[in-house]
Amino acid sequence: MIIDINPILKGEKTQLNFEYALSIKEDLEDITFPDSFTVNGFVKDMAGYITLELEANVNYGTFCARCLKELSETRKITLNKTVITDEESLQNEENDDFIISKDGFIDADETLTEQILLELPLKHLCKEDCKGLCPKCGIDLNNAECNCDTSEPDPRFDVLRKLLEDNKKG
Image 1 (cartoon, rainbow, N blue to C red):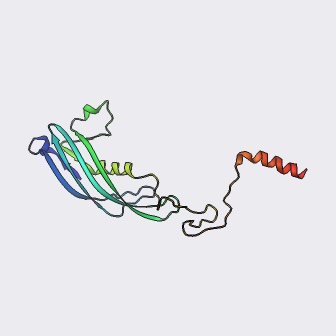
Image 2 (tube, one colour):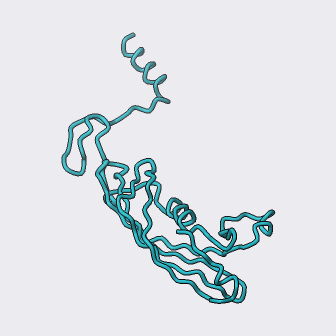
Image 3 (cartoon, rainbow, N blue to C red):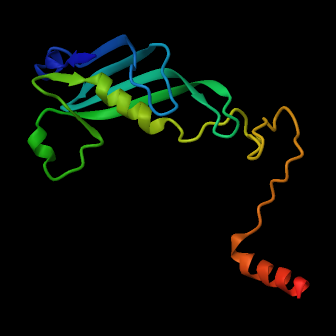
């Protein structure tokens, strides 16, 4: 949503409230956004210091990192950024904490989408103690046990193992 903050810049209002639905069409790796979600927020002028505050409950789908079970998650995302009307004042500064107003308009969707991507966890689990899949047969270890030998010898001891085998032969 493009927000017109000209009434604030002209001193006509001190706060603009808004509510709208946002859909994220792009899918990221294993994360999908099946439904649109409601974004609530406001732009507020506090004696020349303008802030943008947004809040949304984001629904997304993904997979468990251990057992590959499909998951549907919801995460509350909040965003608080300072609005800058003069881009040149940021020449020597990082602009991660600021949102730049171009001709009295700000793009809330771009900023919120970026915040959503930053706040989503890198790894999702269906439950804290998920056992995952057997690396040999692929069975879900949360639902059943398998008899696969999953012990892997340490490759650093291959030389010693070979020496012991040669010693037994000789």
